[in-house]
Image (tube, rainbow, N blue to C red):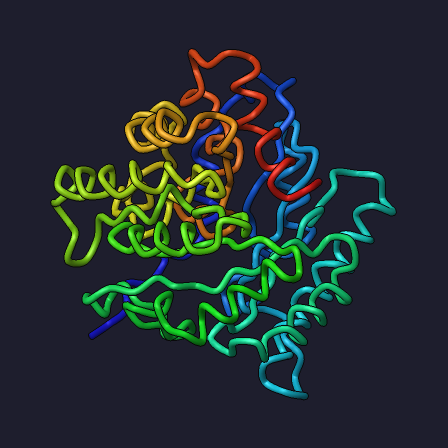
Amino acid sequence: MTRLAQPPVRVDWLATRQEDVLDPGQPIVDAHHHLFDRPGNRYLAEDLEADLASGHDVRATVFVQARGFYRADGPEALRPVGETAFAARVAEAAAAAGGPRICAAILGYADLTLGEAVRPVLEAHVAAGGDRFRGVRHILAWDLDERLLNPAYPTREDTTESEGFRRGFAELAACGLRFDAWMHYHQIPRLTALAQRFPDVPIVLDHCGGVLGAGAYAGRRGEVFVEWDRAMVDLAACPNVMVKLGGLGMALSGFGFDSCPEAPKSEDLAAAWRPWMHRCIELFGAGRCMFESNFPVDRSSYGYVAGWNAMKLVATGASRNERNALFFGSATRFYGL
């Protein structure tokens, strides 16, 4: 069965939508982005810097692992440390240039199923990232529909319940590290159980909780929302959990903006995202929600200006304190920026 691929980024298509920046004085921490160089898919520091220079007041960014720049040799478990070292070099160069604090926080990959044996991997990440390394993302996204799986991140339905994973997860607490959770919406109850078992580990749920609208979930938006909402209510009761608002430009989400004749307007993006994001804010509060770009993955569906404009439209009606929490305060606090 063919995997559901993320559509390619079309720079000429993105150029069909030009917008003025809304509320340009709003400080922003971009709570989730990647850097990688893959065949036909390149997004490095200069590409991020070009997006940051487009008008929104992005003060700092959070780099999240994306399976790039691994070490070419050495023990398999330690090879992902190369990605953390790369991000740290990008951060140092950005700091020297005096611009936005790119990669101000770094999230790496470590195989938590190693149990206690993951400790040297975590320590190597901390050493490579210096004072910027903040934690781990071990991707957990699983589904019966094999089209929605990423073979680069093999996982099982019950990974979070395995003894090895839980022993490895306990090492995060011992090292004072955080956990970024990427999973599909129907897996949220498993994250709730994990958060309850490890209340001392700060957890953030990526991408509005893994909204699905493609593959086996196409045409089931209302049904998905009801199940997602029920799971998010329970998760919100865990005080150690926060949520990232974004990631809805992925093909998995099924909103289909990438197939529009022209790049979408921020108003259209906001209309599609509002039910999900507003419910997250309602359940968790602005102080436990943070906006993210998820670039360059979401770049297949919209440009950087339109994406942040849409998030600003979603936040219409929020108080200034709530807006500040959503756009920079929550991420600053969670990642210790």
